[in-house]
Length: 427
Image (cartoon, one colour):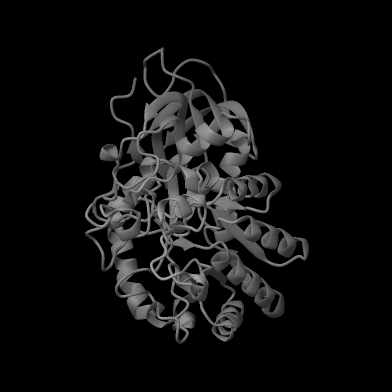
């Protein structure tokens, strides 16, 4: 794939996020280098003097996405997925290993890396699997992959036995890598379970996925982290119990971080409709769980926000809550939804949102965001619009935010000194 050539430009009098605060500054891209300088006045992203104020961030990082190649290119490709990420302001993503073949050795990982090298628009650092073929039976060839992956995960499947997780943690620690855990105890999942085992499920006759299936495995793993000293990250937490367990683990000084998703921070099971675009794993949970996640975000228990961008075909998402595939897309809506529901309402600051979408994930997983890396994204925060899946760059269109009115339009994304996204027909 031919990547875009370097483009030089200057943005004047922007609100630039720099070292944890916003300042008014000029931003230039000159021969692939981002330059921040004192504001001089005049000008904007276009010559239109009615242009809205521009906010410049160091580029977002998402440590939990699904790019579907190799094996499932009918759902998404590296090319379409990274274009979707760029449209959402992301400059770095970590794709999960739910692939065919699963990246469980240097050879199978190499197939994925070849596609990334050829087609990725932004930085892509994949995960290797914890177990061979993600089957949960024996460890993968972790050592052969260690220097080329963000960490190790069997995302989509929890490691069901304590013995195997202990072995994985000890191996990851020896390699200096992080275990990234999808926590789900399958012995606590009702057969056919599809949504939170709460009020909506009871009223509408659905089989639920209990909160305990998540937090019991978090509890088990945290005990193993204390035993092994492994670096550990919990995927997409959704329950109040998980928040409290991680809060206590951090207080003990364990090397633990976690993420949650935009939908868990802004929706509950009472927002559900019997449509595939509301089916994800873990499911939407109660208002009490949502409040606990927000409190965890505010006090630092929840370190970062990740979308779990999980595209599927239209057919796979057309069978309601019971029959549709698990997963929704999120790269193109994350910032706007969170800015609209959490920042504009005064729940968190804009600085906090940039921290959990950019700085924290980049620091934890050593991802190259930031002006010094030639990366940034530019937003008009006052622009209001409706989430329209037909406009998505992603091949996946299923989002619970369809039709939602939001603020915050990405105008441009720059990665490694190149413009990888620019909003057309700017006004």
